[in-house]
Image 1 (cartoon, rainbow, N blue to C red):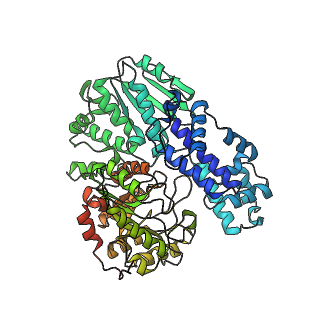
Image 2 (cartoon, helix red, strand yellow):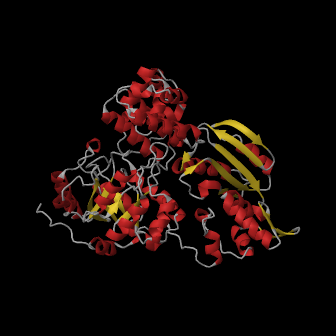
Image 3 (cartoon, rainbow, N blue to C red):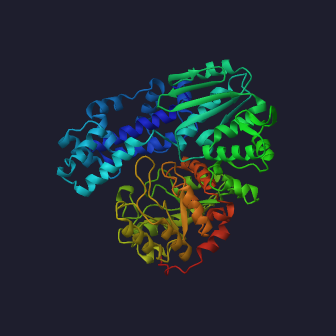
Length: 582
């Protein structure tokens, strides 16, 4: 397999987990495959290359001999015997149903067995005919939500999560860089702008021999279709259906080409209008006055010739960035190196895969100075959530391991569930004993807008709440954001001095970039957290940084850029409930 083997393995494990769910299999087995998918999907080491070279696999958290064997099988053959056997037992359409919001395995089985639907369009027809509401567990309201979800999914062009596209792009970059005639490889498009999902990948190669580079590019392993192969451009389709477009450019026009192919379209149009106003023409080959090229070798040269400073790719959405640049008001965007800690980390006390000490060591390896252990609270039984007694035991355990001089500071926290009525899953006496309380919605996603908003506002009134986690509750391609008045939530956070989380997990990337900017303007601090369940998940912080930069966030806007001493001072802004004795 190609260097994209990790993503293929992860996708296979996710499908196996889905099919096991449909078969009502042991939940621990399902969780093992989902964990393996997460670990492998986020791994930087190319497992396919290791297997091809006959080398042993690295020790991976939660992955034993059985799963390791399956990794080797998929990496070496491109297939999984278990997955293929399960797919023969379960029609593919039934697995597709699990991707619809609000449909669990039990309801998906019922729809298939009673309505005999084989495809999403068939299910849509059944819903519009009123047949879905005749199935046990479904009503008219659920049927209507199902219609909306299916129509939404069928109308969308296929898009790929930022992390998946990044891994594929890195493999393609390495492939192109290995060509001796290629001087430089540049990633463009929505991937460079750090969009949360990517429709395709745009690459530029700086070289003189365009025809040879395009021909070699078209032979990239894992290519299923070669749309076009020319002298300076080529387009291919990969096994996962993603299209990759390559342009080969000369050094003197590489900056203009990178600017053009990075986009967005609206930003490019605004720049072209600026050029026209100066009597110039701007295209992918450069900025021209008549036949004279006056800029184009670098992006900076083009912006400078237009009277502007360089604008970071994440800002190029025509949302006021050109005016800000003209007036010297561009933000100094946050960098990954600005993060001092991570305020949402799980351990094996709940549904994490590693010990607190192992998570602390992984954070230190990535240059962080502190973490907050925020395992789930008792309501989330599937995640082995903590009740007040286990929380007290964990607090004591952290104190014990701290005596071994951990490489980072460890804050005692909890990810406490916000219950449907807005109360919290643990009493004030338990929460008051902690350094940090992260509150989150994990249930009742379909509440009407007014009730969902009131639920969250009531939770924010609780004096122990410091951070509202993944504020919109979305899972990209799996669950739409719940209906909530985010303006009211942001105003309440400002009033109560509560931070909003930007959850960096690539399946969430929640808070949205637009709401990040609104929160910044309201002076609500943002916490960019990894929501790590395994040591490797800390690497997802870079995706959160990309989302934050799209939201115009600076270092000063982000809570966990503070030093540990500064953070503790912020956490002491309100008096907590009296601490019980351990």
